[in-house]
Image (cartoon, rainbow, N blue to C red; front, side, top):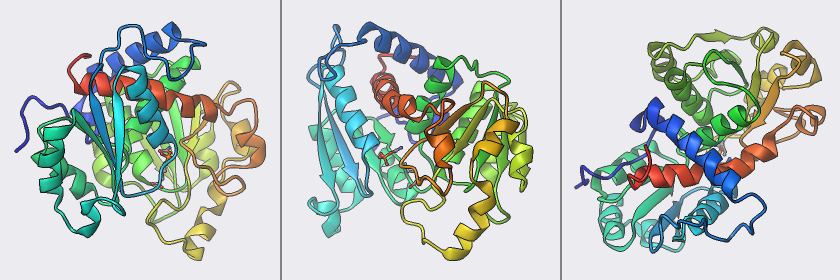
Length: 313
Ligand code: CP
Ligand code: NVA
């Protein structure tokens, strides 16, 4: 069963606000220290030298896959990838057995899966750290990168007004978790029936965040500091015409950006569907920081890995 010493990041609450602040600081320091170095060159201290991260993908990925791999290289370690199609997971070997076997062979496990219960089971049975690389419920590593990006762009987190548009999905759930821990406020504009889970709203409010739910996108955008959206149809969801129609008024376009503060930034975890959840003018515009955000997945991942190995926070 799980090693009490293993630090898992199944959700951001596993770390807490203090550790997340430490992760962001360390990510900024490491990023600055290696500016303009070749991307595969290890950091001078190689803190994870000799360590191996196993990455399990039950869903597609570009950023999470590449950023964890490069993060491990920069920390001096290595990675390997398992997918359902070519591992015994695809033939019905249990998560519990997979967790126990991998714990004998590698130093940490990252899993991207369709069912949050699977990562919880993995964390229960693994004796090495288990890190959430996205589930149907949450995407914590994405949000560490997003917070780093906000701070880099001069947005101190406490009291920040962060507006979300569209689907109340996994990325929003982790953003809400972060709001409670880092004390920023959230305006969430969704169509009726696509709100985030109440559990995450309550968590944010319990932490002191002001969370406003609305069906009026313009209201959410007014004087916001950060505007965030994501695909209207997440992996594993049905591409339903009625959902797409309901989402149409929630596109982040130039009118929406004009309602926000003049120095507001636009975030999107990517992959983007330009013309759906975001207009081309906003996606390609000067307030869009989506490629900084994508790069920051590497720097944030390094901090998550160091925290999970008790070398940080
Ligand atoms: N943002 C994100 O997690 O991207 P990938 O699906 O490409 O990993
Ligand atoms: N909400 C999206 C995020 C992709 C990185 C999904 O789950 O597909």
